[in-house]
Length: 287
Image (cartoon, rainbow, N blue to C red):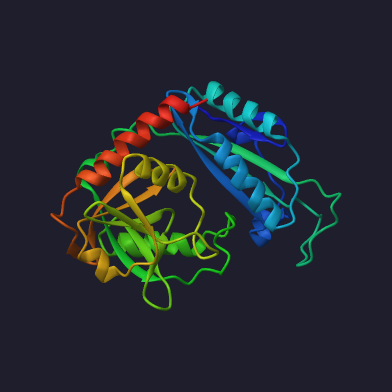
């Protein structure tokens, strides 16, 4: 079935949606994006994604041409038109097409380009990887220093995914100049020691994950201790558990780091429980 996508106010078959070659998202990676999960045909943590979108746009001096109400209606319309039960909606806003290539921002009168499309993922909840856990390698974090802005500059994370694939594992975690883990290629990173969950504090060097915020809130409510600080790959290898979070992963156990098993080498009780809590709570709050 051909997907219906959204482009600048219109719902179109994906084969008919076109964006100019002069669009700054294409030429300069001058744009931001958000990915909202869908469970049971409803949107997960939509308000959080809109708030982060607004922040990202503000950091780039970009104006969203449509309001929150219209964004919500558009997301729901895409879910309905494409019959999505479990999956994601990708939203991208770029600075638009100024008519030619220039490093300077175009005049504010140039309209932004707004694109959105669905991705159908029937096994998000029952993902096989959640039962086996994933294996990761660590690589240097060579991204620009404002990864807290959710821009479409995703080449190095893509290279990190490819490095993991070539190494025969599932993903990469980035490390800073001091050798401490920042985050994963498209997710936030955590380790567990006893009843304590450790993850890097918010700053310009990691994405302010919407799933991260929810999971840490649920962890505290479940009486886990949360410590926001950097940790090293060696610390991860010696921890009881490790996991990643993202809109597409929920809570995903990590069972191996750089070839060394974490804990028992199997998904642990903390990550497993947090995944259950997250899915239950998000289902209840979905809109």
